[in-house]
Length: 425
Image 1 (spheres, one colour):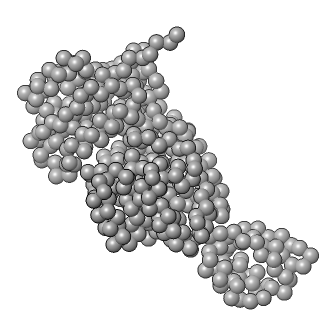
Image 2: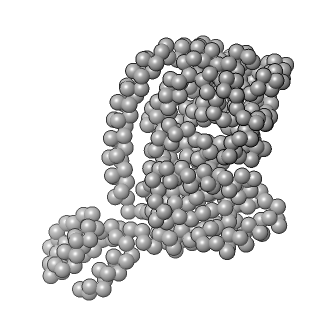
Image 3: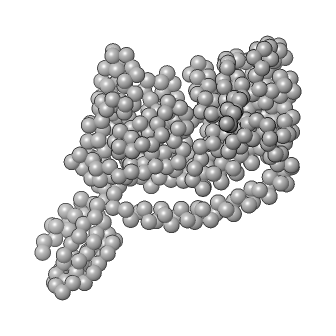
């Protein structure tokens, strides 16, 4: 019988640096960091705390007194891994590891570890590996030269039995070149798939939002699918698409995408371009927010920042969804609903209970009135003007000649269909 693996005992620190103008509200930030750690199956988070700093120290991040103060509970609780919710330089990491006799992982390293554990598509796996190598390349000064691997992660966290990740920068650079070549092949294949999807006769609706905002729960509720939906950060990483028939509206393809997070490593924005490209190609973007979260406004701003960095233009139709009404007190719930009703393109819902979904679906249908749909037309030989107009509009998907004329399949908008019908026989 196989013995269960021992969990790595971890402690989470959130440095609150007074000189940082962009610092987040510390309590929800620490809670998010603990949730990130909980997303890894091999960690047992036994403690967490906020560490207030006037400014970061270049060599150790924390002052000598704070290092001694923090080291006591680490030693008493036999902590093996300290997760620092923020950037840590290679020198700071090395010095802290020596001082505390533990492994140190910063926010970027933790997110990389989670993504590595969850990535399923070939491109996602390759991009995460490249991002991890780029991250490690700057950290060859670290004290822990042999990191242990027990599972399919990146080796930042694991247990005994790990082979040395990379001997030197040259080995990492060679590996990066090899991965880029593999990735180029995957990207070419995906480009072909995207071209094929462009011919799909249904508009695409992309769900985006901060991680754990409830996108997958909403996706499951609308599609009847069984996408992983847990109260856990980054429960969904790879894109999932399903067809949905809107009441009194068009059929659409609903796309569930990776959740965003503040301070997302830039390498990982590229790593999941596959899932995010569904957003760039969508006819409608639905931004799902956890309206019950204390930091909901900052989360929404983080999402908008990442969408902007991806090149999503302001002209793209959008709807904002304030989710998780069920987690609010009755008075707060009524206030949020009233506020949403006063705003354009904002809808308050509970994906869990279904509250507000009818109004949301009706709004989606209205937004997509300009979306394209397939029609089959029978044209006689005498209808040359109509046939020429269809080709000028570049909407003909297929045409075959019949005994009486032509059978034409077109992909068009309601407006184009109305213009065609106005031409008469």
